[in-house]
Length: 179
Image 1 (cartoon, rainbow, N blue to C red):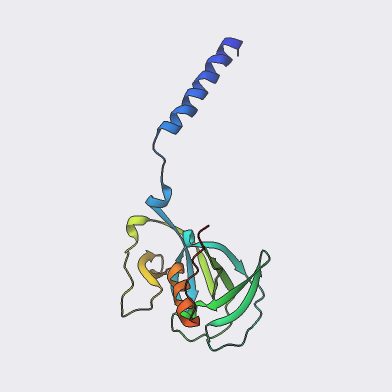
Image 2 (tube, rainbow, N blue to C red):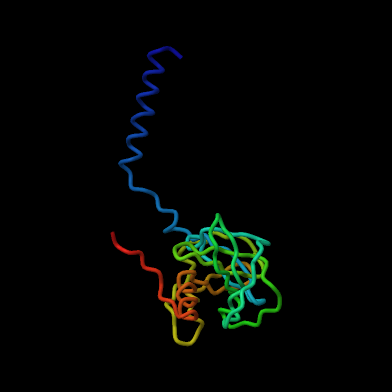
């Protein structure tokens, strides 16, 4: 390429780059939902990846005595001690064996939920999800349904699970102090 062609190509690339900022941002999170297909207490569920900050298998959990069967204990994550609750127990299912998987809920205070099986990661069109608010009849942590291979799964809402844990423990949700 001649120096003139290089200059022209650089100008085209610069113009293309500048134009990309003028275009509206593409929102893949609006068009699609990233989910984890899981099993807790022998039943299928889905979790929104946008509500999670980590996924771990076979992480040691130190048992703690307490009045709540759902509290499995605590685990260490990046230097923080995090309470671990059994998702099946929070959903009212019998807990046949110790869960293998832990999902860290995004947000504060830290919370991990344990479940038995990870079926995989799925990406679905947001329009396929049937959104539903918490109702008085079902568990307070289920929000919506999603059709996946093998059947329709209820969606576990991780912020609602945190609120249920706070109700169980008598603590109020964490609200940072204003400065």
